[in-house]
Image 1 (cartoon, rainbow, N blue to C red):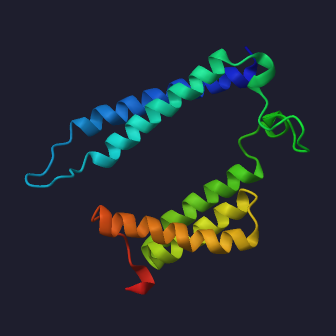
Image 2: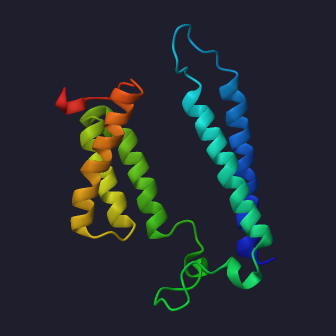
Length: 164
């Protein structure tokens, strides 16, 4: 087993165990009388998702042939064939995503979900290699859909910020 697949195996197991812990805690949360959706719904969904995707990652790492374990793009592509070229966790993409997470924590209470979410989503699309026009279209649409789902569908209030 290559070091890359060993790291994926360990990460998958840790992720699945973390999901199991979150699920166990979420199932212990009591629902509110008369409410169809209780406070444990989102943690339950998160825990199940973490367990499933952690198990998938561990399964793939365990059973993938050594030649496939590090391949991340199709063979005919010009892109590098392995993540080993930037194996450090402190590469520009990781630092950019970390900065976006910190920015969203700081900006959402000040600017509100719609403005801060759009700005952060715009930055994440660009960090991921998306084009400027794609980011300009996708960021407000995705943020608006997420806002509508939470506010109108789940009845979870999100910060208004500058939009009051």
